[in-house]
Image (cartoon, rainbow, N blue to C red; front, side, top):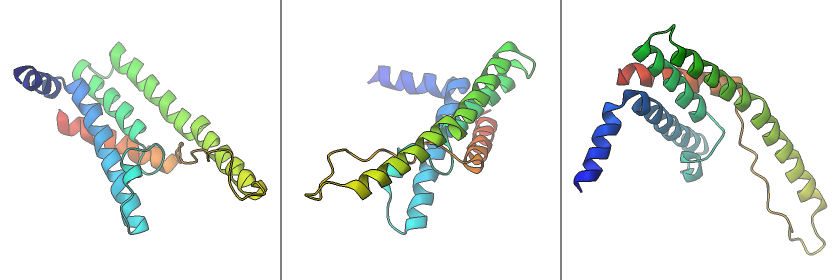
Length: 152
């Protein structure tokens, strides 16, 4: 049991790791709570699923970049690398992943309309909520900056 407590102690001391993990968890919890409030019933899948408000990926990478900047300086190579990585992840969330979600929605509609004569689908529905709107990414990024500031 001592090894487990050592691991937790190490995680808490490693601020560059702890900030992004705490930002990710905060965003996921908020995502589940917001979805549950909106639908007025528990949305357990939103506590661990991709897509939706806020973007936990954006929260995580922004917290990583902010933690690197706070630890090593805003002109450091580590901050530069993590900031560029963050922009790529957030751009991808709004672009490619969002487009894939839109395509999945259309394909699911086509499959539903076509259906089979016996009324059963022969293909499992595709996940539609995998990307993010710019607002979802922006809120996730704000959570990331706030969580990194709290950790530091």
